[in-house]
Image (cartoon, rainbow, N blue to C red):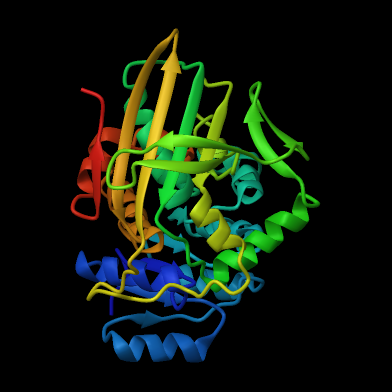
Length: 343
């Protein structure tokens, strides 16, 4: 089978990886599945005939080179991204193919911009970190909301989740981030990331329907604090999380997601509500949908398709809002995501 225009999914057997494989197949893209566990990859291929299986451990550069050989792009779904991101983007640059990941780990995203910007720009290769529900969707909404503005005073991204049943991968990535920060929290203010031990603060946030008024945790910091200021002139980016979802995430006994429809989605609903302000003027953009893990698939796959079609605004390491036409990208996510943008 030819893999000339194929897309590699690394970490294909994971929860999010399976959604991404399904989305690639739905769009008719040849798919190569990769990861450390060969037996699990073979089992997945047995469920979906036509998949190309290329096992590779992330600490084996030669195996990664074989996995990516002759393909067009790789989507990295295998966390912790602090471990997998570097080796996989290095392999993609050796292969001369696009790299997209779905990392929500703040420090891993910072490292991607810091460590690979020069090399990726020189190679004119697209590297898009955090192309997922956290980091990617918020960045697209902020960019679209800003429109012709070149700068803003503040950016607020509020996550309203009806619940949050974390995957095993989410829990592992969270532990890695917690350890790297020595238990501290992080914020983006005064134009930089700041680590702190300040007390958790709660606010009320008026989400659009169907959520309405919810209590949120302020500075429940997500990857948007890396993606947004990577290309927009904003000194402060604050993210918020619905208290119910934060408690679910913190609960050791909270179960993993369970499918409730033919697409494999859970019954979780979400509203991402973005407010940008400049000179006393506010603009708002909102996205609604179902299942934060499932919606990562159309985000990541749409990004890859646009890169392969040449529908990009830059090269090198760039966030979603810098790489793509944000408003057009968001509209293309229908019916998985319903968006409301400023007129």
